[in-house]
Image 1 (cartoon, rainbow, N blue to C red):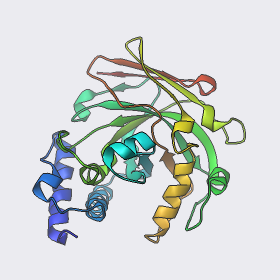
Image 2 (cartoon, helix red, strand yellow):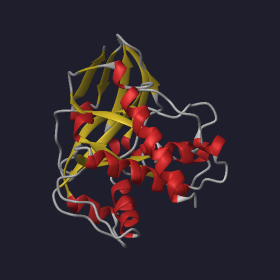
Image 3 (cartoon, helix red, strand yellow):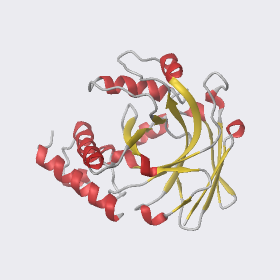
Length: 261
C-alpha cells in the first residue's frame, strides 16, 4: 500500500479540490502502483476529515453496478462512497453548477433502512426485509480528479465520483411494487436522453444493499438504521450544464425535476 503520509496528502488535496470546486492530477499518473485498497484508504481519510469538520453522514452510494460499467473499468464488483447531509436535494430544487467541478446525472433508486444490516452472509431477502422504503433518486456525479485516463483507483479515491443526489417524493415499500421493473426516462430540456429499468442494477436494485452490508462486514462495520443507500444507476451518465432543466419519469414512482443554475 501507499505510505500513510502519501494517503493523507492525497486526501487533503481532494478536500481542497472539493472546497474550491477544482480538479487535481490523476492519482494513478503520479502513483501508478496505487491499488484499490489504497483508494479506499484515501477515501476513508477524506471522509473522516469531513466528519471532523462538522459534516453529517446520511448514507452510502454504490456505483459500477452494471456489467457494462464493470467491464469498461476492468473490475468485477461495485464500488462505494459516502453521502453527507449537505449534498441532498429535493425534487424541484435549483442546483448551483458552481458547487461542482463537472456535472453528470444518473438515474437510480435509493433505499432507506428501517433497521441495521450486517454481513457476512446478507442476502437480497435480508436487504429487502431491512428496507423501510424505496424512493426515486438522481445522482449528480462530480469528479475532483482529471477525467482523461482516470481509473477505478482514481474514482474510488474521489468518493466514487459522488457529488449530490436529488430525491423524489413517492415512497414504496419493497412489498408494494416489483422494484426490478421501475422505469427511468431521463430528459434534458424536454428531450429524452436516456432510458432504462431498475433490473439493470445487478438484476435487482436492492442486491447492491446486500453486497455493501457484506463488504462492510469485512471491515467490522455495518449499515445503520435510517441510512440512505443509493443503489446504482440503470442509465448511462448524462452531462448537464448551467441552465439545463432535468426531468426523470419513474412511472408508478413519480417524477423528479431539477434545474441547474
